[in-house]
Length: 390
Image (tube, rainbow, N blue to C red; front, side):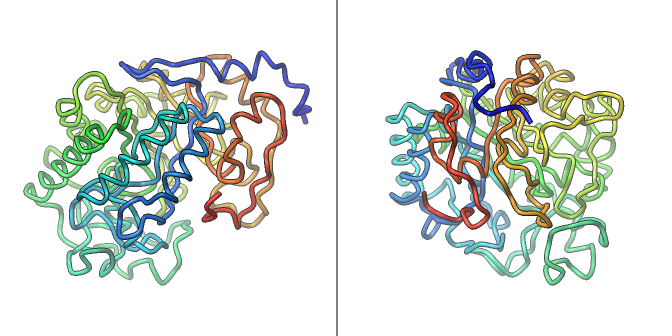
């Protein structure tokens, strides 16, 4: 293992160069990855939430992507293993005032911050959330294939893959408008851009994946057509917020319904998925994997973020096991800190990706970025830290 203290300081310093994305200049390449928390009472972030994010900015993190923030559609939010009433929104006076305070404190600490807009789609548990009487939605009314590898508790897996009817044009339009409305709200309270959660089996990912999208209209079909719904959201957000703010898009191969699922099995297929999103206005692709230091496709060491950058020409962000030796759902072994950053720095030096997202290691130590820069040892993450306000 490479000695943590022996890594060339110049290699570390490469991650602390600024990056301009449209009119926004990030002070460095370290990003706090979005992690759902559920600490916003009644959906409005309070002073504890502001302090949580401010400490990460004070600790040297250049960009914070917030936890998932529900869009204001009745079907957006339900039981996510948390107190759903405490998952934040980006609508309503109390919520917007709370986010304005969060943004102000992060900016005062020298950081940038964007919200991750989220609709749970097929993953919303029926009968839960602020509107328990509404039916959960997915493109074709399908939860996904049953009997696949999943971390979901068996009691929460539906007995029937069909959870409802296909989304109507009216509902599709309502959901698109909810995303656009919340993006507008985000810019109005001072956020530095927008992130969209298009991964992990949630609604935007439901449209991308053939396991949940079996439509034959403009919203389904081949890979490019399955990308049309999130692409339309991107296009409309871009028109609404203007040209100065970056849009991030998180995507993943794996789904909560099926860890072995893929959107693409070759770089060419990945281009079909991501091309429409890039054309619509995405600036950064956030490629969610469990281990960043693995090749995405057979025959190449390039990871998923690297291929996203290669096939779209857009910036990309890597994530997955930075500072932690355990994939998010690999619970058969304890999480331990990893101090061998040579592979990460080598990939970055080769131009494979532009940003490095750090998740649980930043829960463990708000000053992770500053300590990484100097070679100091960060406080070690423990699984019990997941919901600790530190």
